Length: 439
Figure 1: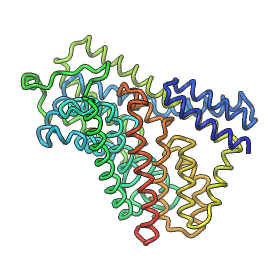
Figure 2: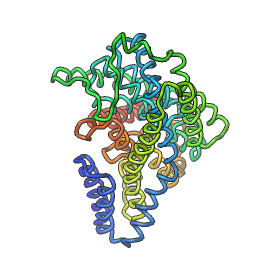
Figure 3: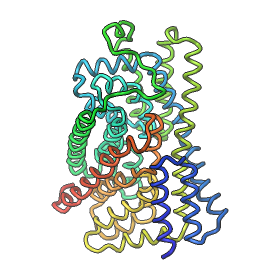
Figure 4: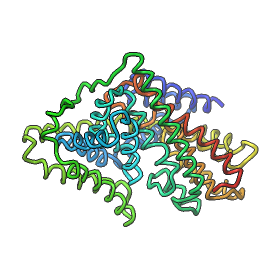
């Protein structure tokens, strides 16, 4: 009992301290210490084989991807390609539709296989000019990117290459296209609700006197007719984005590791951008850009990994099984119990992909043995994995805040609405639709 209470207190401590601005490494270690004390487990073994192993494992798997993503975003900015894409999008759709432009562009990238951790690096330099044109407060950007990257394209749309959608297919005997009708309905609902909320929030903040302001490290050209004279051709500028889209699609179809496919695609995009803009960027700017990319990547991945380490420690303690027993003991519909158990696991691990991996290993066969529809089970637990995985201590949130140069007090609330409240609504809507036989 004490261990269970300790885990809950540790999660609460982690959320509060990260939200208040404490460095994620310190917050993660403090929360892990609470777990150790309350669960009465070996101190050094839990820190070393739980926390440190979880943290270093995440860095090992994703550090190259983070660097490639940061470098891609930096060269898109230095080359002027980001400005060119932003100008064309604004010309086509209008500055007033800036939110839709950013959400749609992000969705295209992530549905092609770009990780939610990396997409912020690619979209940020483009989004800055879109936000500037529409005078949209910059602190709304994490919410926009999350809607396009971490909601309907990650968990709801059939065929999504996101790891959260791929993992259950390996355990439940389904495919990534499981329950297509159910998934499409939920994706439409989530997208519409998300866009309505973001537009409303932007209007509220504008009425309160908020406007677009660049971050402290952002270097932007003024948006005027004069500034467009030296902007690269749109079709030339859009090729790197197309390279990422096609590269991920082809790479995953060829059976490449998902992270490797992303890295190769990003590298090709970087090389294309660097070669075509080589003469227009000074050697000093190139060196500064690549160094800045490395620094930003290390900051982002360390912040995220520090929280992943906490999840590694929690998984080691006996109290973790208590949460699973509680979830599986819920009466009524097996699908409801499956969804609730996924909610709990992802709230603890702060990771949709990590949470669904644990759920499938520990509970997948249990729920299949109860005779539930495997297609519906796949889609609903995938949607559930994308709900409470986005509490303040989630890794992508830390990355988004770092890249956007925002504090949690400034930018987290839209993330919470977009990635927790709206998916939760869709989760229970999905249960109702599944009860009607929709698959």
